[in-house]
Length: 308
Image (cartoon, rainbow, N blue to C red; front, side, top):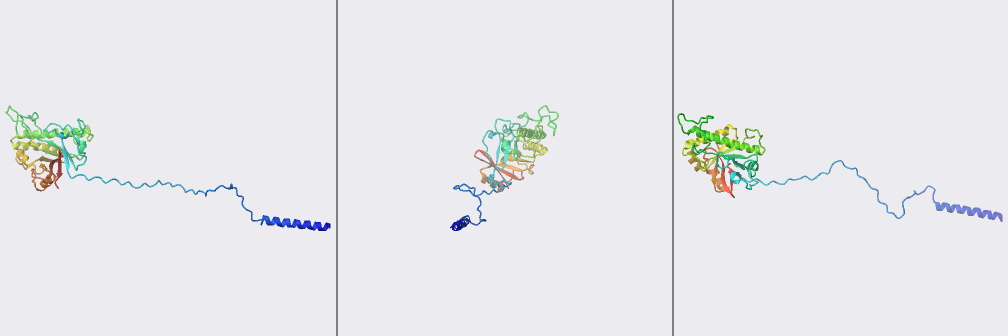
């Protein structure tokens, strides 16, 4: 009886051990401990890219295509003082004088009451100056008694000298005064030093020969005055000296001289641009040399084309 109880107890313990082993599973199949909270969605791990040291490449900036310049140039002087002038032009020419010899254009430099026409034109500006030969009775600038670069005197005469050389000196002095006016204007806009005695670069000059200025009936002395003006500008090493007129006025003032055939001519009097082109092709230069430009008036402004 006692042995039966012991046997049943041993059998029960054996069954319990087998059951415990079945529940626990193999000893090597141990699950890792999961520390995550139940019910919380886990984000995937973040991947960090290494920072680049190069700056981002900006797209190239394409500048706008500039408007083409017009074919024509503009010339202005004292009548256009204070006027609004065009921004676009192929070239510009500015008058140094106020319509007559020894009178400055008040709008040339920056020291006048209106905007500087030099600054409007830019550093490629060309200049023109008035000319005349009024004689000793009509001009207080007549060079009586001057001896350089020529002598204006007549021995034995009590009256004021009136010779070929005097006319030459008048033209020389007139061009010198115009040059000084231009130099002062260049200084005023900061293009030349305060102590400059010459323009800072070579500039083309045009001598304006019109019947509106004072001329004599003696065409030989008129030509002498133009010689003097031309020679002064040449002595200052300007780029070039040309003459502005019309064939008719040139013939009346100079007798149609060919003394200046080595100098270009600038013709006035065309009706419009088409007429200016035709004159470039067909009209002989009044100097006998190159016909460089032709002028017409449009919208109240002088327009010019260069003859190719």
